[in-house]
Image 1 (cartoon, one colour):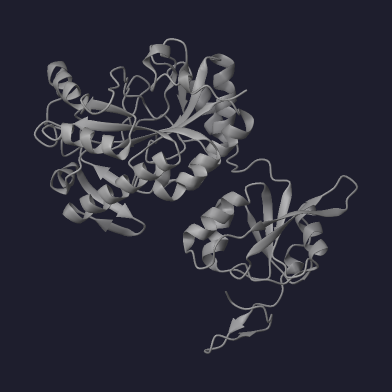
Image 2 (cartoon, one colour):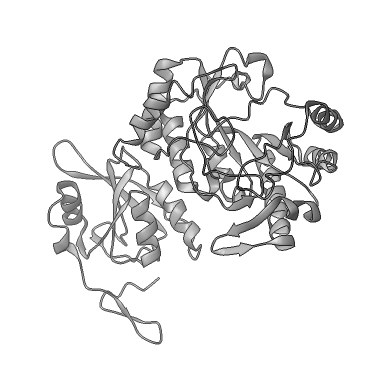
Length: 423
């Protein structure tokens, strides 16, 4: 049975009374600061984007998904819409999407993003059949866009003003084009802000149509306390009708948006967020485990007998398992991602090893050690036979005895002690 994408109530108004959605709040961090956004305030009766009662880990989100479907089997869409940005939290986002896809293969998967860090993950999204992505685009002219945002953070660098606007726009355009190259349905959200970008909405719609976007959602800005735009009034229904009619010349309009919370659940016309609040909180108190099902161990090895490769040098990793009779079996080999890929390499590798509880290596740097550990893959540095390392990992005993000599690099870059290179 294939996925029936017509069951998405946000993209198909005809089924909004038949099917529902659940937003899984696994993405707390954000990489931009909108002048209309305040994520600090919350109550169960407050309904607006950026609000959630709690944060879930991917494994907690899967458990919550189970409970939601027991209560409301008409849920057809699992989405991530914050409360920050999914791709300011890419590991949690991708792990959650994979867990849901594996357990619920017919579920529609959906994401909402500002687009800043979206493009690098499009191939993975397509691989796990994330079919619908919403990108919030509040302008296509840097002079307009810079008025909407206080700052944009790319990695550890914070940009402001025109630089921030130009960076965000370039990333958004690239992400949307890439999504369409991979046949992913794209909805554009544009927040109408009086005196800031409301004169510019038609131009946004025209540009998004040129990029191949499928649907346009023009939303009225909600004034929020403790934000730069708190004194700007919310646009009225007549104003919004004019904006939508102009935008409709270029793209179909979504007119039934309910401006959902980051933990919204239920049908659009029959919301059950308050009703599921207790369940959400209970799931948030469960053990915080990323990647519950990890039967394998990855190994960096040159010949398949010894653990004798630095992780930075390994182009492929062997994947091993422990059989019921206690023996060990090499299951397959997997690419260890591209060399010199920066931190992104280790995030990609961590997701590729989502079914591995540990990786046996001769040595590795601090960055991959930290990133892999956070993704639930325990780095074990050792030298010696693979089976000794496997026995220690699966039994949980003797791990400290496995540690081999630390490799040292000379000023000329040669390695001393292990002879396997520093990578």
